[in-house]
Length: 340
Image (tube, rainbow, N blue to C red; front, side):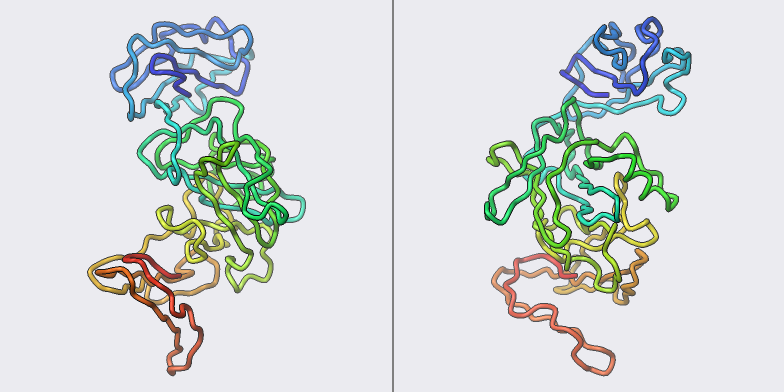
């Protein structure tokens, strides 16, 4: 369901509808006191959509739900509400930089598989995907975004706290990553073109056609994957914190093996929030096991400082006091952040 304007809502169905049944206004009810629409129209050019005209305009920054009655059927007589009888909608707004972020990337698919890019709406506002493109970079273009691919050709909005997956083959992604008992959400997938994602390093960005507004950009590296992995084919990179920097290696982690190494359309298996508290430095969890099972695969060393300008050195030692790794060397800190 999509609000085209405050007084018009369009419902999109996957099957051709019985036009007479689908035009009955009594079969539609909208939450928050809106009730039945004034009219329900099935356009002659598209028997898979219903246009609802509302008696009064809906409010901004509010999520409504439209319910569809069992009398609305497809041409074979099947009730369209057997699987999904409700759909949310709201007035969509144009996204601003960082309103929606790149939340998961599969840039090195298994043999015969397809890439995907997942977006997440980190705001409290319904965001429109219309007019936005995915893009990458090429060596000869330096950092300039090129190879733009339009994300959607129909009206499509992303609700607060929701995910959407862009891929060239929806069926392939659902088949590969829906095998671990996870219920992937088919309504949160868009089959669309993507720019080429290099298997070892590359860029994926959300931008307008002329790159004057870049919503988010990730310049990823294969080295961001978990070091213990024997093979990185078919393993997605998941964003740890939607509010942290997109290009920080500390903000990305390989998806868990228990999630089939990918969670398209679902919360990330490796998501976490920095443990910012009253202490200057916080380590959480204090014990971690980087075995890729999604259970404490990494630890976050979070900091909170009274002033900017501090320099950090972080060295990891084993239980005998032997240096294992120099994690951070002479890095200028902000007032708040974390290392993985």
